[in-house]
Image (cartoon, rainbow, N blue to C red; front, top):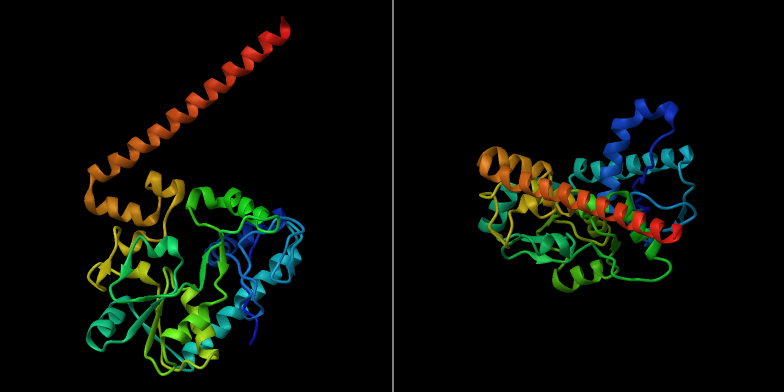
Length: 295
């Protein structure tokens, strides 16, 4: 199977930063969402790898323009393959509303390939859950630097954890679903589900449907949802969710008015007060230590 590689860009060099900023940000967001993977058949690298780390057979030099260009080529290659699957009719495209009709009226199976962090917040009634990527809960010398890098480079803000490829994905799908099943594949934003469609098609599944835009693009009336949160909120987290600064929450605030906004404004004030208290406390400790040393 052709290797699937997605970019993990660092910032471009200053001479090209203004020209490539928008493209870099888009690719960074996509690669970070997919995060990492190691199998040769689906080689997805995390959105950032610290210098000298080697994952999935790809070694990166931090800030290297050659690496950045390679990631852009990888992203273009992946998009070309996925576009071909759709253009050739090997994977049919459904909107979230069409997927809802298909599940309810024609009893098609919806395969949810999202990680557990998203699945536990909201899911489609009657869907089958087999994640193509899930939380990497290993703690060893090889995975710890990647986890630290993921957190420092934005995980603290977005809440996106370090993910790893589920090596049992195909075997679990084949165990539960015959290859002639009419299978609707969905994830949160529509990227991982495309990667899953490619794997499933190459494994012999021929009746594949992809939910364009993912479950995040669904309105509440499109699908029968279960779980504590709206589908649109299943993919957010971290400090940005706590402060209400995600696009989904801003849209919700616009609909619900000032009461919703005041909640998150109060949280923001609380964060500033807590940070100020920490700074004052650190200054006092520093002066106390200095006084001790001077005496």
